[in-house]
Amino acid sequence: LEMQAAAAAQPPAAQPGDVATTLTRIERKLNLVTDIALYPLEKALSPPSEGHESKGTNITFKQKLIQHYGLANAPQGQLTCMVLGRSLPKQFIVAGHLLPRRAEVYAGKLIGTHVHDPRNGLLWNSAFEYAFERQWLCFSHVATGMEDNFMIHVINKHRLGTKLADVGEHRHDHDFKKAMGDLQFGDLTGTCISFSSQSSGRPLRRSLMIHAAQALKHCQAVYPDGFMPELHNFRLGSESGAQELVEAWLSSLPSHAPSNASQSLPEELTEAKPHTEERKKKKKKRKGGQKKRGNGKGGQQQQQ
Image 1 (cartoon, helix red, strand yellow):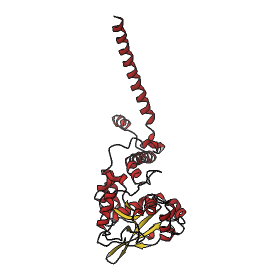
Image 2: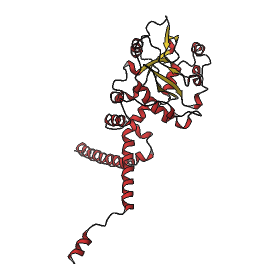
Image 3: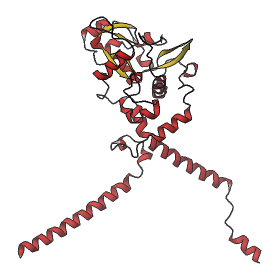
């Protein structure tokens, strides 16, 4: 009888189905927490909203890039576009950040330096700056002997026929249109470049590869026919694997999301909102009661 009573007191053994259900719930919760934690970083690395594009007009950063890449000896009034490899009127050359300024808080962890490090920038025409920031294109790494070269990939098939003269800050400038001519983004895809430089300065490969990872994800549904990312080297390199990158992201995340984050968060990330609204109503009600009591005391004093 004692053995039967002891057996009856034991909790029932978990069934395989119950264990699987519990693990699935845990996995969903972990995924939800991860999505919430990484949301500010994902937003910082996403293309900017309309009207918030970078203009590349930071004069100090532009001078840093000119010195780093040894381009100070360009002809008067000209500056080299490091993508096209030729001189253009200097007003059409902008200083582009590879890891965007929006991700400044994460720069130390992601690229090991600050966003205004000249290795985190390139001098190129304003049309290319616009397309790079919009993630229409990206670079893959090409190792050729002792040099680090990079290949341009226009990965948004809808932009292959777009003329450089028709986009960016100077698209309405007659001289810019004349300088760009009929050059299309599709003409650049597959071009292998070393980023023309008169010095030993080179851009940070890690910055370019982080941008490529985001651009490939952003344009996944609109890849050009025949484009296969696995045939190209978009990896960060031996200095940082995927796990280290994820850890760097997590360790540098802010303690809370931006105040406007809920405007574009997925629905499942805002499930707690009704409870928040309820707390706000209770707080407002308490304040109203306190104010009413205060007015009552004031009225009694006035009558006296």
